Image 1 (cartoon, rainbow, N blue to C red):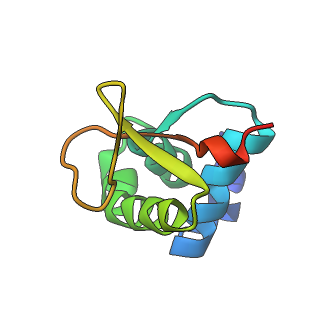
Image 2 (tube, helix red, strand yellow):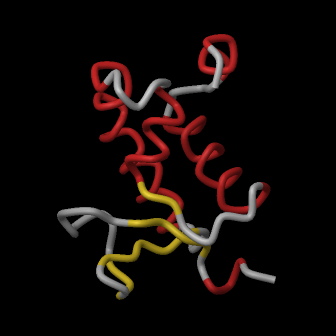
Length: 99
């Protein structure tokens, strides 16, 4: 991703919600990690100062999407509540959203 592409990504909660759904729907990914979303929004994966602060907003965006039954949180192969679960959580489309 170029620096120009990085600056185009909206890093607000709504922008991150759009990024999550774009990755899952338009790009056809089965699941995506919240860290991967933060890195995508923040830029270079080796520059943690850019993407690490975005993790809380990514989590909040995921909680909003889960409350609307758009995504599901997965940890160790089981569906979890994103808001209360700690650790690494992957996001995937809610079963009602799959074609």
